[in-house]
Amino acid sequence: MIKTFKEAHGFARADVTLANWRTAPYSRWSFQNVRDLVPTAPIAAQAPAAEVPIASDAFLDAPMETGLDGASTARAFLDYAHTDAFVLMRGGEIVAEHYAPHCDPNAPHLVFSISKSMVALLSGLLEAEGLIDPDRPVTDYLPEAKGSVYGDCAWRDVLDMRVSLDFEEAYLDPLSDFARYRRAMLWNPPEPGLPAETLADFLLTLRKAGHPHGGPFYYASPNADLLGVVVERVTGARFSDLFSERIWKPMGAKGDGCVTVDAIGTPRTAGGVCVRARDLARLGELLRNDGVKDGRRIVPAGWIADMRENGDRQAWQEGRNVDLPNGRYRSQWYQSGEADGTFCAIGIHGQWLYVDPSTETVIVKLSSQPDPLGDEENQDIFAFFRALCRRPA
Image (tube, rainbow, N blue to C red; front, side):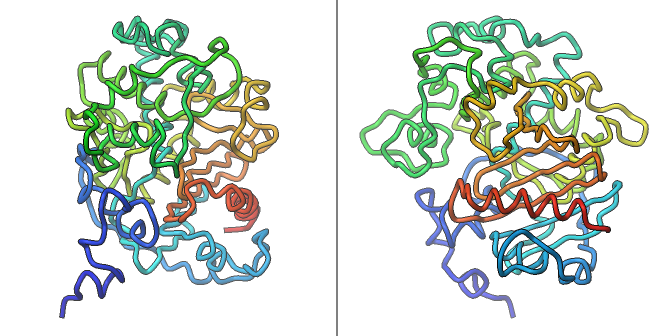
């Protein structure tokens, strides 16, 4: 007999609304069912197919030092960290994976700000083709940005989060400009008496802070939404179609993904992409292999080298928001700055794509962490990932 929704999830479907879908306990369901809540555009795979997780009990339940008191196995740590899906690859092979009881391995999961790192790959392709130059001003590609914060900054400032932007990511303040931003992307319900805005409308109302562009690292999601707007303007194609044809299909994704869109179809490239955990691991493996899959180059080698090796260390030190003391930030990707050459993409509520070239390891962790930021948990997770990379497969 088919379970009722409430029997399966512990709450009724009607209990999940635009006002609460990113909060516990509803997020355990909504992060895998975003299409039920927000308009989306598909990111098509070449030949979608269901996949069966490998048996991983021996790996997950073996004693290990996780870096967290009271968690003496990988499974115990993953449960502590509100993990929905976990995949570990070594040398291109999946060696362990874990899915919470409420998680469907074949459902696309919201990856939040890992989306930023994904749209940056398209920027890299367009740079290699001469359609975008990181040193040119944003207004060369989006003339209507004149008069906004983006009216006098370079594309590189946007890519590296060095725009002088008067904007705060106040995730938990319902009255902030950030809440207005969330309404424009259709992630929050409309407010009675307030005019509706599209995402692009909102971006062009943003203003400059009191210092020049190109200064300290300042993490601000609107920058990555602007990337999506410009990618669509330059190519004349939808982000979802472009990502599908240029990256998702060529790299061998097995599941369709999607990206949330606003009222006129503008993609939420700062945080609206939803994909399977295994496919996200395949994307990490593509980058670990310098952008090549089965002998075919998908991502330009020069862009990957620049992303992994460059980025202003001083700008990072002055503004860093992640526990990477020697880190850098380049083209929407985090660099560890350590000898292992680790780089990663991170999203709120516990989303991770972590690549350690020195051990040929790729780790994906998708989560429904109740605290959007979870800074203390982030420190634990870095230690856990490093321990996993040192552990024999």
